[in-house]
Amino acid sequence: MFEHPARRRIFLMRHAEAAYVHADGSMVPDERIVPLSERGRTQAARQAQALTSISFDRAICSSLPRTQETARIVLDDRQGITLEPISALQEVKPGWQTVIETLSPAEKRDWVARIANPWIDAHDPNARFIGGETFGEFEARVLPAWAKVLADDSWTTLLAVLHGAVNRLLIHHMMKMPWGSVGIEQDNACINVIDVDTAPQHRVLLRMLNFTSYNPAKEGLWLTTMEEAAARIAKNLTRN
Image (cartoon, rainbow, N blue to C red; front, side):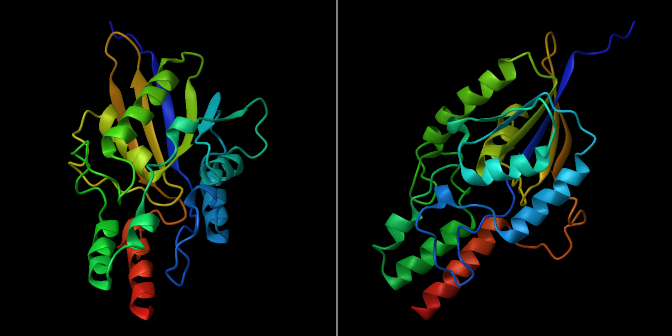
């Protein structure tokens, strides 16, 4: 006889647009304190509308402002939900601003190409994300914190508003795919829906990936967010 599995659901979101790189291609002094842009707030509001019928019983985010702001827009005035920032779930730390200042013009052009596709070496735990944190350090920080969230049996429906690289890592990890083997893009404020079964199967079901209600067909969206950033940086470099 079929028995209904003990199943929980995760709504894993990326934060909405935040302007780490200005329109002129100059970089912000500290990406950790960047809030959402006006377009980002609109994106978050549209995604919130898509989730109005969902009753969350736990909500987490990272300790960075852009995830907290997105999560609060999504949660709106839901009663009884306390948003929990988890510092270990911060985005992978880049080192581009320190490195790029030391490079020649030709080296800067090569570096911009690496910014466009920083995941190419993600399989190597000693490789650095744009000159910053190694992918091994990133995994060692994020995965234990996420394991604690999954081990908490107090929730059935979880909202987790995190970051592009964090979400990629978690999806690769939960689906048992080699890190860096597949390009899993995470558009601004996207929603992923993942079901997890408890014992005995511990099955993971990917229900939805990278959904954006403000542009469900991805119309006109050809570049990744990192490619867009690289294009703005390259434009700035040609002027200087």
